[in-house]
Length: 281
Ligand SMILES: O=P(O)(O)OC[C@H]1O[C@@H](O)[C@H](O)[C@@H](O)[C@@H]1O
Image (cartoon, protein in one colour):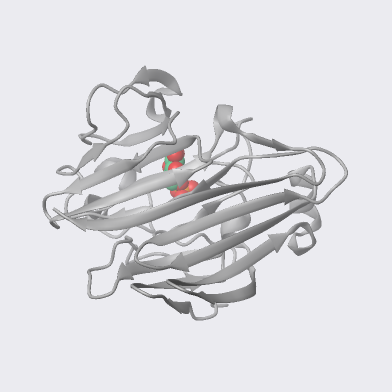
């Protein structure tokens, strides 16, 4: 069976990440001397054409099955294609890597499915924090519309014990209820399968009493925050999540999805960024 190239290591000033060119996927990140911050499945596939379960998958140019509800593969093709490394940066206070994917990298079938011409540029910067920036440019002659998300899997002690702050009073679409809309009452604690798209780009803090830390997510030009955990029944249907491992994952994703779909005129660009930092409790 074909295998993927080994991950690249980005040694920053204050933290280190590993990155696979397969999907421009951040597969691990930790501040110096600290425990891993990103969750990775022990049973993830690591092969061409398959998504990696854990780390930070990039969802693009659609999210899930897309706004139309019938697009495939799930979360778009960006996470299952090889990206090109175009730059390795080493600037004061942060070190990073830049990867690119563009229309010429796609199969004819994927190119037709996109309905436009684009370049996607993704930078991974490791300083004290992890900073991820996805910039999409419409390089074609017609409008280009897309959804995007950085599907971050956070590693937590026990997902049922964490408290998620920052989503209070915001409206979310509950994907476990066919997209029914509700308003978040108070801080969020997960008690069952959770799959929500919040209309919120604000700061989110995950308070983890088991690992004794706070994970802080701040975003720029990301109008959606997605919170996902499959809980045991759904996890049992996902062969790339190891037994019981659902308990230690929490996806807090930043993106622009559903009503927040981005439309670019020819020549226009859009950037979103996702910053992750760790604080002791
Ligand atoms: O199994 P996938 O394609 O990686 O998706 C995992 C989950 O990703 C979440 O972002 C979606 O909101 C969920 O609906 C989905 O189940």
